[in-house]
Length: 406
Image 1 (cartoon, helix red, strand yellow):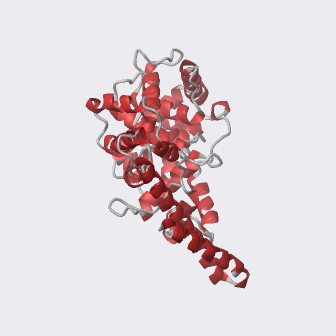
Image 2: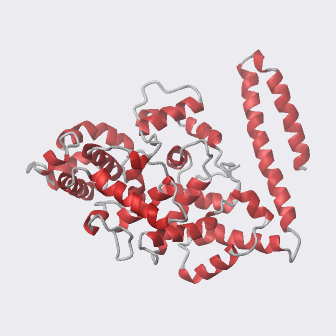
Image 3: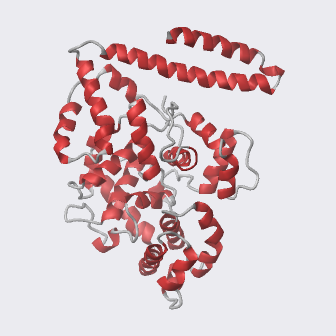
């Protein structure tokens, strides 16, 4: 059945392309047919993999069952230790044909851009984009520029001032649980209070306190945010070369300790986020930085991922929108979250938090984002597109079955 649909859609697409010179209507039909073609491919793949798994007693049959059990329900339920043994036993099996197909999944960034474009005016207003583009690709580029997280080529080789570190920390903390339009509306006033992100000037200003700063933030957690921001000012005032002395030094030591299993920049960003969200232990392989400087004020794992992204690192942050959509895609498209379990354990163990099951789960989501981002696209860009999808187009309870993976 799907093969017949596939052939018909191919013919429609050819006809539409032939008419494209005739005007916008033909072009619209061409785009619609192209999208239908992709959907038909998904259905065809599903039919093929179901046939592969249908043979009772086959290794592929059993491995496929394990994959469905692990890929969604375990991550969604927190992957309790009682299930951990089953995770390892199934990972040791031979990879099934179905698993091979799933491993090749990548996010369909074109579809994500098209979906984000459906809320163009709202997003443009929230992000102060004065002249929003009239096509999905150009508009997505405008939003990514407005978010201002274009990655550096070599983040450990950057020279970053304490003012820039402070700005990145404030943005990560303040934006947590706060509409970005609120941040933009209040930012000028807050920047004045923060002495334009000069941590030394702020730390020596007795007039700026939690009581005076928190109302300016206007966020749901404004008191906690103000407290964390002022602690960051004190830390950076006492450590004026914080990026090089702490972030780069710790990053290089973690990378060295991970050998021979080398950490990519995206994985190193996650390892740093775990460390800064939780602090060091006696097992943390870092000896040049005092332990008290390795717990970032006001930052859990998601904010600790956002912080280095604001410093031009590229990666995923496992916030509520990302984890919710990944769980949904694991259920309906078999996004293989469990495939990241072993690597997640290695990273969490590296920074000295081997028993933190919640950390392992968060790292799995972040690793899945890295793994399924097309190679020619920064992970932060894919993350932001998926976050926009979850925040504006498919909020909780409004998830669809569109094929965002291909």
